[in-house]
Image 1: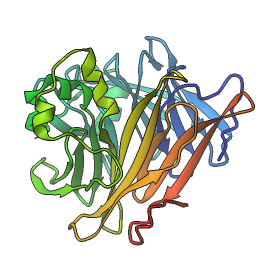
Image 2 (image 1 turned 90 degrees about the vertical axis):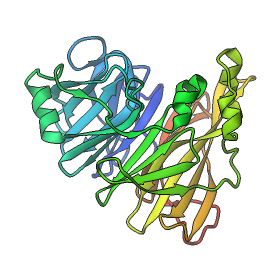
Image 3 (image 1 turned 30 degrees about the horizontal axis):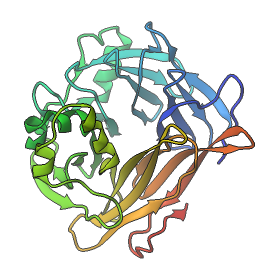
Length: 339
């Protein structure tokens, strides 16, 4: 699907892609500090928020956001807030605070609960939750400053406390919620965790490496020292960026490899999808995800669906596309299939 952008409403610096149940998409844009809503045919519908420091404004829009029924939530990483809007009208409901000790990476709305993930540098916890109605009530009554979303469940792996380079460069926590359980992945860990709602670990799932770079050995990560050279870690590893669990019992992941294109003076990324049965009986590692040639693609998982926002340069113009693929782990063909 090609987005029908205009001179006033276009995707300049996408930081996240959020699918909506009606087939439309929300795109958080870091250039305009706003969220653009396109319908299932790629037509522009409306904008949520704008650049600024006031109500319904973003100072630094976050990749973390969610849609739950008629509710839209998008984070602001500099204001440490979660901004709430009505999906159909675009009306701003209000905002609640997020902990200044944690940049939240994911929001997942399930039933009447909002789950979220991110490393709390003060407590060392990685997951939290809040009743959705309490979040909305606090935001709409201007009580959001006293209502703070803060991860308070599930200790982060010890590696994050033992090495500050790892804690700063590989700090992403991926999250999905299924059948009353949490699926949690850390960018610096090759193992996913399945927990109960209290954060108690029930199982761990290893995602094998086949084509992607993978992570260095633990000893090598522990030996990393702060400095300009540390940033080179991104060009040497692949790291987890998304997780999901589908209705067929498969766990899916997206791993990213980053490279700097010196000729284009631009970061490039390669993505791989892996699938494993939760019981470990079937594994399909590292299916390559085709992406285009302009900037960094944004990917999101929704069960066994992979949504890809991509930009292509054609005749000196940039076109933004959203493609949806079905992940087929049973056949393990090394390809993803147009949904």
